Length: 253
Picture 1 (cartoon, rainbow, N blue to C red):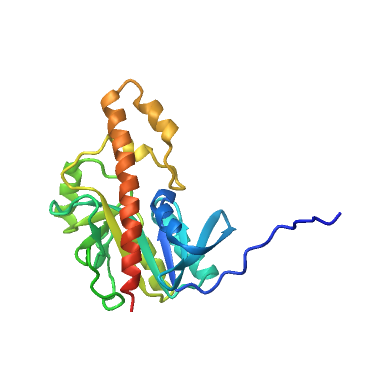
Picture 2 (picture 1 turned 90 degrees about the horizontal axis):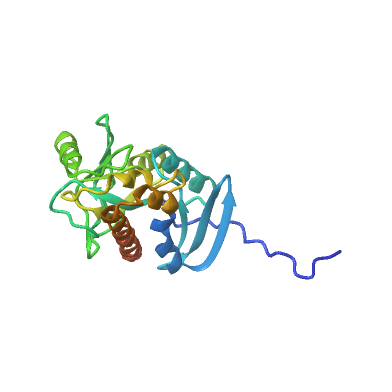
């Protein structure tokens, strides 16, 4: 029997102008909402959302949390969508006390725990209002929740920000000789202690395990309040990041 309304397949992926790799769907959602002519491609457990913004074709992927996931995400985008530039975007924790929540930072260099440094090439994007092109971003392998640990990391590595993905994404792009940029929004400042449960709120795919968090915090009203406040701040940061990325793309040369 012939299906009277056969499923329409998405067109083959177009070579993208920009590939954007984020860890969490929460980080990517507001950016995806800005895209026009959206197509979705699912393969090997990853979904790429392709669309148009600021006159460019973007391929956006939430790769999952951590260095291995970031590398896999970059390789997936390069294999299937062939972007001319890779941008690692998302949340970052501040180590520099001068940085405030929701500040937008385009780091100039990246460092891992062993001291290896990756410099981000200048000239790919010009000065962008509201985005600070300064600082060094340190790769960490866990969510850093205490102000004391942030201070220690800043002292040991002379870094201004931390995250769990950007360094690995940059190395993957460098190995393929694809230009690389990063844009990060400060999700938590250097002075604030986060609830210790935060590190357990994420699964490896980069989604909040809200149910698990609520069970862990039951009977602890102050921590429960902190969790919902953190969740609201994350949504605000994602919105700020999406707006910043749109402006950032205008500055690409």
